[in-house]
Image (cartoon, rainbow, N blue to C red; front, top):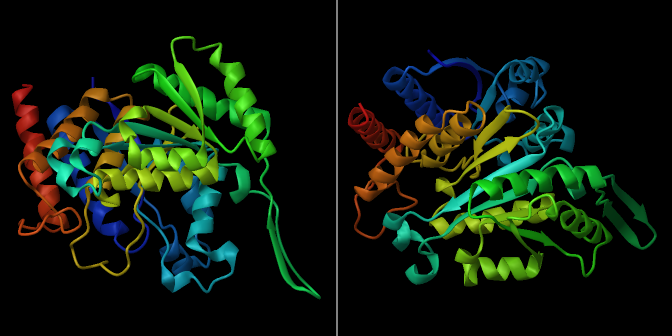
Length: 365
């Protein structure tokens, strides 16, 4: 029986359209090989949407996303739009999209491929075998709290309020426990409970929920210590769960363990199977249009879409293995190439992955 899904595609800004195109093309080829059917509908978003409509998240784009089974997105933003009022900036459109779709759980895996050990900034013996998942709360905390900036006789004063309700913490922590059950059954909850009241509430919720998952080994770690441990002994981590701002910072740090932020995918999930999938990297306007961007993060984001939103674990594994084989063969874009190694462009890397996808599909009959 043919599996059929609707995908809203938001190419975004900068290198977004280039890397998204390769992921969509690969998805189409995967469909030809496996019988998977994906109906693609494209929408405008971010800076590109602002240029056309004056709004980084037009209502038509939001409707398109709500009617889809999943959203595949490129990066948004860039210096071109930094002068705009906050509510008009591409990044604000992204926050609105996540909030509107109630996507409260951001999943960012960091896996160090054996063939990429030399690309990591860490010693090989430290980076080898790293396979962790950062689960970041995405719709609460300081990014969404009340903001103020006032001028007084002493000068300007700014504030950002950090607020969490216990139910917001409970749903993200429960998601992290469920993911830990599917992995190595270890959960590290990261907070700043020695200073912040919100972190003390976070820790109490984790302790309460841990009784529902007796098989999972739970530890609490302060965020500053976690930042240090990620570069000191990263193999100790399996699933890390934390609040919005801490997760934003730690997931970028974890990304560099792999050698390049251009390698890291992400998923933003809510209730049910619906999700938004995007690369961790930014829009990189300095290389946009040059055909040199690394498409792997977006291709692996597409694989996460297959796994989490479509329930197509075998198809997702085909894509992931195709990426791994291409890297084992020595395929490299400029951001992950070592000295003297041949360099592929965006299309060249995608073609190598496509070639291995076809070989893997043939091997499996």
